[in-house]
Image (tube, helix red, strand yellow):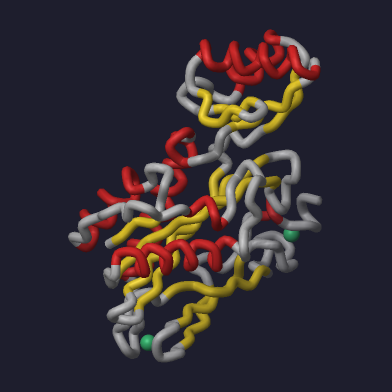
Length: 262
Ligand SMILES: [Zn+2]
Ligand SMILES: [Zn+2]
């Protein structure tokens, strides 16, 4: 399989897919995934995360002439329900062109150091660096990306502050500079493997997965519908077979009830 990455993601994706299906990873030379969007906003993405990951995988297939390609795409931002907390969402796509298989693994994690700040002093820069796990995690300091040691940090901060007195600092979210993110990419790859092993009960095709969830699991105390999932829909994208299934639990913990625990 070709892994479409410039940022060392094969280190986590490769071994997991090798163990699951015996796939051997190659990273195509000459692939520039940065043209499909960067985290530092120099280049905007062409579409949503899944569309972008598909484009990367297809670019790798075109370059290698192979049958199987894997690509991943990450995003960072406020959690939809808790806007003060940052989350990292990762998506890993496997395309097998010969067999017509597409598998999509996903993971969502609070374990991210995604942050930006403005500093006016070296002390403020040091405090930010310490808070975001530097130097195990890289920093973007003004124009300097992938800053991983104190000396480079000190130079970049001094140069930036000398120029304008105020400097923009952010965490470098590229996978090879961000071990927290590598962990979430590993989780998304594990989800991809689980989906690949989930077979359609009708046609046996891999990737039989949940595509929709409905909230409304009744409260154990008062019976009112809660925001917890009540049932989910499984879909086979090969033959179109669908199955709606209630979750294993029949009632929700009253802690989630809008009436009992407002
Ligand atoms: Zn209740
Ligand atoms: Zn099927």
